[in-house]
Length: 600
Image 1 (cartoon, rainbow, N blue to C red):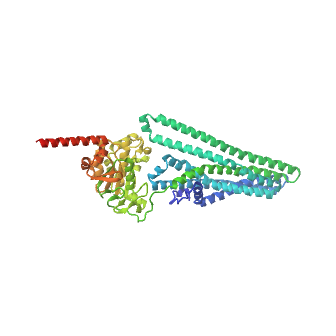
Image 2 (image 1 turned 30 degrees about the horizontal axis):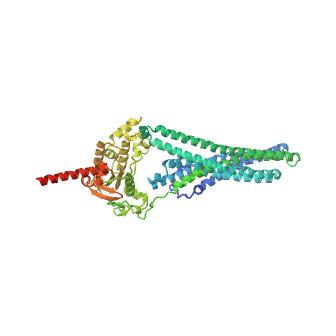
Image 3 (image 1 turned 135 degrees about the vertical axis):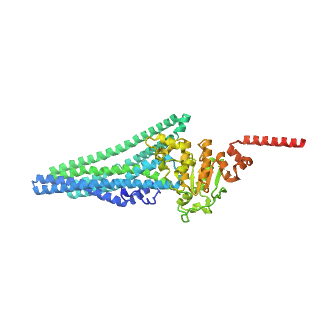
């Protein structure tokens, strides 16, 4: 896989049983790139490590006054320099490719999981945690996957050099061969503590990110109640905790770095001390001493990769664990289905509540519990929070359809829709039937003032479709965001459109016009609206009251408001006491009428 080939046609099915298993799965799935990186890494490190032997041969040739050997050494050094340059260039290229492709694979997996889970994702994992996994954690995971092949090349080079020194000069080579494992493994006792501190730092950083996300999302409300300073103080405290945790983690890594510098230095001193003694005894030549000394000094370069891989694993392991946790989440229903991909039509029926939305009609649903209404709306779209009997569309269970087909057939817009950043044209560029133009959808959703606000807020956009929308549409009011989201849903023109409180943030005059536009544009298409607004209810073909999880009444709005006290309580928001008082007054009036009739 090359960078230009991204994204992957299919990122695969990850092994999300644990963080280490997920890292190993990523490494195996880019084995070709890892082998390339290993090969170029070996060329680079071996070329670097061969230079000391060339220097030793050159010094000995000069001592022996051998011009032929000196020329041969120069040619050998030129060959090593060429290998070093080519190996370093290609190793960097292969390493960057591995890092980007690994990160891209993880991001694709996360995006696919988010698309499969839908709104269930944020119910199981905090939004800030999802953001942290898809940004910072992805970088750390890619770092370890990429660094593994470079570490392997460095480890193989260290072994080759150690064996070469033993063969070249056994008296000093044994000292190096014994000292190198000590140098390489000395940091292992420090790694568990460093890992724990890194985990604490990451956990506190995740909480700070989540708090910052919540603060920004609710900033307008916080300002309205004067609570922004309270939340800012909380974030300041959280950021200070992150800083303290980062300092504690950095202390451990600085200690590990110091050990990685100190021990090779001690090994170098031991080699020089032993080498000088052997040279005085005449057991080694000057060139051999220079070779061994230079080789040990050069070995500090590949040995640094031992520290890097330890640091990369310590940081990537908790990141991989969090990513695996998200990727291991399952939908309550199968996404593949048991039927062929199709978009059925007909009545929408929920066997759990008994709700029936006739095909081609405008059905309004009244539910006194907003949370229950949200769950029911998700059920109608084939996204139940818990496994249960499937909703039927034209007699076909939505759970038996592939997820893409179910989503094409039934579109659900929740009560808090999200506007993605970009231009309005990009926002409205959604999969659709093509039967509803953007202008008609915007008109039906009463977005004229929204378009004017977008043009006024854009410096270089005369056409409203080219005006940019900020992240989540925070520059717009709640009602404006609702109307743009409604227009986006209308453009898709699904077989069944389910809207959960689509006009809760708009004024009554605008709401009345939206109700007329919605009824007109969705004429002949099945539309289900969860609302308690009399303006929408009065324009519905049928109103259904859902009480305590079951359909309690159905009929026109005016009949239900007159004949069903439970319906009237939800729509008019009357309390039990007010209802009792109203019923008492009605009984008194009836008694008075009866007395008048008897006296007459």
